[in-house]
Length: 104
Image 1 (cartoon, helix red, strand yellow):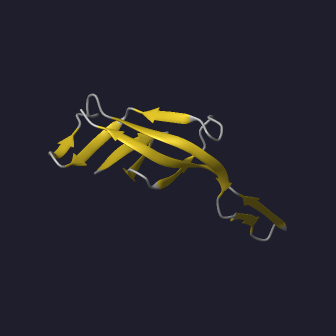
Image 2: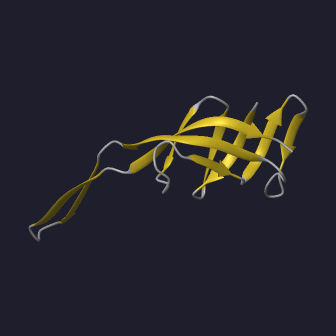
């Protein structure tokens, strides 16, 4: 059984028991989160596609930790003007463990 869920405006494919890396959420490690914006639900009874969301379906997950992504180098320059600027950025992600997929 798997589902397509919308978290913070992005879509993720989730399966029960798998870990998922999403954009940062406010919950702390060990807390449980429920996502009710399920776009697609696939299981033994077939595939349910929402319009836009599947009614009565939700995903329950436990927050494991927060992690930083890979460093991205941002380099700006203007030719012939002696202007160069180098910056680095690391996005913070939340690691979730999907515990349950509740179907309608």
